[in-house]
Image (cartoon, rainbow, N blue to C red; front, side):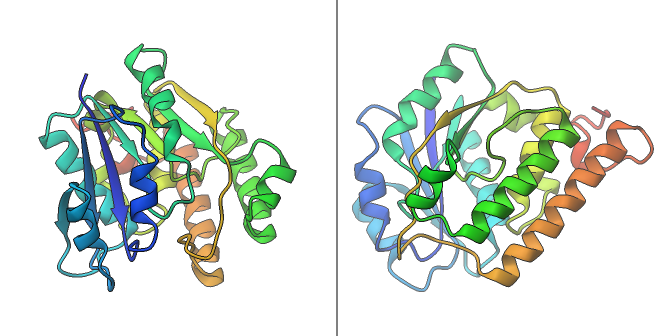
Length: 249
């Protein structure tokens, strides 16, 4: 099975190399980096590291970056796609553990959860307000979708090709809420979702949205869950929860 790692990148020049170097040899057949019009030399470093690269002419947003990543991965024949943020916040040494569960057909989606205990999360540098918001949103999302995930908001994920071919992620937002929409879609379409713990590693060079963007992300996430509930109740139909063949989930 062909495994491709994708990295949606923006101003990741200082952290890209250590993130890539931590990926165990043989974990992936190809690494694709999409540079969302970075203002630093992210693209040049990626080329030096031997990654497959593409650059947006203008900054399109985090969600739009992922869309380009997945289009390329599927076009390059990926059976499994792993998304790793190149900001060194997530421990990329765990990539083979994530793909192994997918290769053995135990699961369809694997999440790298940063929330094992409150102490670990906070000692790892996660800001207190982000921890509280993460816990609150995850609780609401679990109750609303019938899941029991420890974290809905991780940026370290792995999917099978079937997931990416089924979910209409092209209809999702180009902004940060793309991740919440994608995971809600995974639940709506009945994909098997699992988790493995990953160390929390916040530092000065970690990417992080500011307070106002965090508030907007939270509101958009709650709106996504509201749409999920309405759609599953068959009260209103939303395109993001319709399969690519046009049929309702």
